[in-house]
Amino acid sequence: MKNNEAVKVVNVTKDFYLDKQKKISVLKGVSLTAKYGEFISILGVSGSGKSTLLKCISSLSEPTSGEVIINGVNPYNLRDSKLSKLRREDISFIFQSYNLVPALPVIENIALPYVCPIKKWISIRLQIC
Ligand SMILES: Nc1ncnc2c1ncn2[C@@H]1O[C@H](COP(=O)(O)OP(=O)(O)O)[C@@H](O)[C@H]1O
Ligand SMILES: [Mg+2]
Figure 1: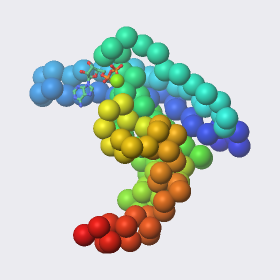
Figure 2: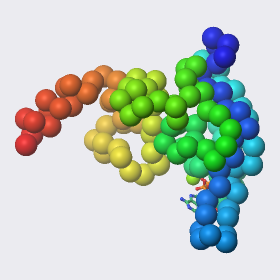
Figure 3: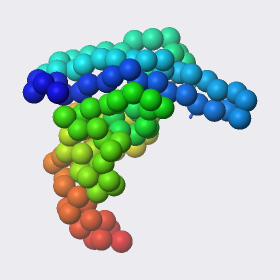
Figure 4: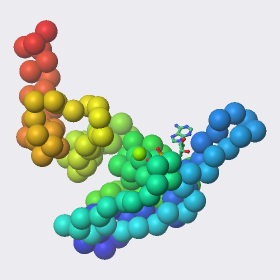
C-alpha cells in the first residue's frame, strides 16, 4: 500500500442470498483507490449497489470476496476492539436518514465521534442515566 492511499478496494464482490436457490450478485468485482484529500462521488441508479459498496468500504459489511484496505489496514481482519478504534478514529459515517443528531449540522454530525471520545460518551451516558 502506498502512503497516499486512504482507501483501496480490490476486486470486491457482494452477494445476497434470498433463499438457498436465489442469489443476488450486487457487486461484481469493484476496484478503486481513494487518495488522501480526494473527493469522490459514487453515482448510479437506485438499486445499482451504491449503499452496498459504501457499507463494504466503510467496514460495516464484509465483502463476499475481494479486499478493502483503509489506512493500510483490512478492517475485516481486525478483532472487535481494534475495529471499533478504526471506526471511531479513521472513518466518518454520515447516514442518509438515521443515526443523526437532528440539532447538529452535517459537519458536526460527522465530527462528533472525533471531538467526543468514547470515555466522554460513557461519562455523558452515566450522567443522563
Ligand atoms: N441485505 C440485503 N439483502 C438482500 N438484498 C439486498 C440487501 N441489501 C441490498 N440488497 C439489494 O442489493 C441491490 C443494491 O441495493 P443498494 O446497494 O441499496 O442500491 P443503491 O444504494 O444503489 O440504491 C438492490 O437490488 C437491493 O435490493
Ligand atoms: Mg442507497
